[in-house]
Image (cartoon, rainbow, N blue to C red):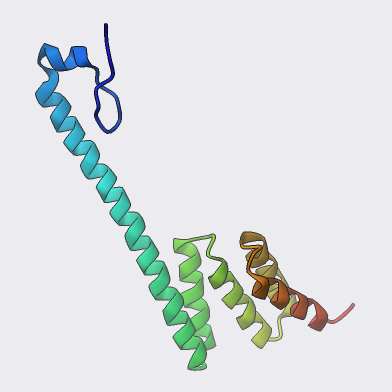
Length: 134
C-alpha cells in the first residue's frame, strides 16, 4: 500500500521513504522550497518595482515632465500588464496632449480591468465628450 508523502509537491510516497529515499526526498523538498521562495521573492520584487515606477511617474507628471512620466507608466505595464492605475495615468497624459482617441482606448481598458473604480469610467466619459465628431 502506497500513501502520499507530506512534501510540498506530494510527489513521493511512503514506499520511497522506506526504501532509502529519505535523503533524496529531503533534498528535493529543500530544492522545491527554495524555488518556491525564489518565485515568491521575484513576484514581490516585481510588485515593488511596479509601484516604484508608478510613483516615479506621478512625480514626473506633477513636475511637468510628461514624456518621462509616460515612460514610467509604460514600464509599470511591462512589469504588470493589468495595472489599471498606470493605464489610467497614460490616458490622462493622452488627454493633456489632446489625443482623445488614445485617451479613450486607455480609459476603456482601465475601466474593463477594474470596473469598480468609477474614476476610470468618468475619465472615459469625459474623453468621449471631448472627442471631435467626424
